[in-house]
Length: 396
Image (cartoon, rainbow, N blue to C red; front, top):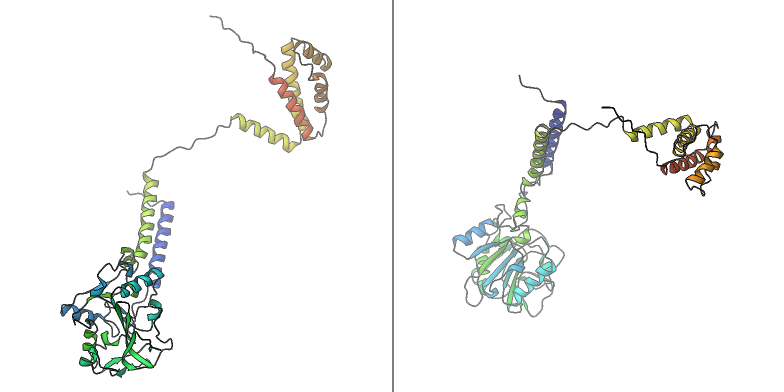
């Protein structure tokens, strides 16, 4: 008949089960909510109205050289003159090293398509306004004749900001001079094309008016009309190329502690059942140290300090008389004089403190410090004696 679960094991199983239920509940409650329908992030992974998955798939079907970029700008180890980096409304700010890498990329001939109001976080010389305009969709016409105006007579944009004052390196392509929505900005050997919003490349806005031709023209070189090698940034949308950044967005993060608790419970219960059995050593009640501690405790509780002095006094007299070969009733004065003459203890004043010990052993209340001093003197002198016990030889 199988044995039942021991009470200790049942307690461990209940605790482990409770922790498992608690972690499962926490994983459900604390799991990040799914992306909302109206999320404004134009990510190439998003099929929502504000996403950019349709534009990304369209470029792949049209055989554009396009790829998602999930690494920091410091790793852009390519020829910048042939590359277009799309930064569609990035919401995570770059660190100083990443800002410097982007600036070097553009100065060396790279091209950037930037959408949204956050351009000043990446390029500090940009002059996009901080005051958000009317967020409704609006249609804009070209401000000047340009390569974009040929195919895109009207573009529909939901502006997130307007460009402010212009300098000689900046040119308004769509919108008014004081409320520009598309700006071409020459920086070093490269160019930054800024849109006030991402509408022309989003799933919902790419089919509005001439947004699609406008978007495709933005991906081509102004001189040769050849398409760039396109790097569509997802790094500043929170996508990271490391393994941990991927795992952190899954339920595995909460699953690892649960697996650890279960593994610990299994190992703990197995070790308790399968480990070697040791019988704990029992301390003998005849231990000399225990006897001394017990006897000392009895003297202390009874306040019998004089009894301890009497025992040490009688023991020392017995040992000393045997050492000197004197009768047991020898007086302390005679015993001390004999010890000084025959043992050479002239500096010890044996007779004086023997008499002190004899007097103290008869007192009802003796200070513990005085009793300790006398006992220590008697024991130290007793340790100097060299009495050999008598050995009885058995007859064969």
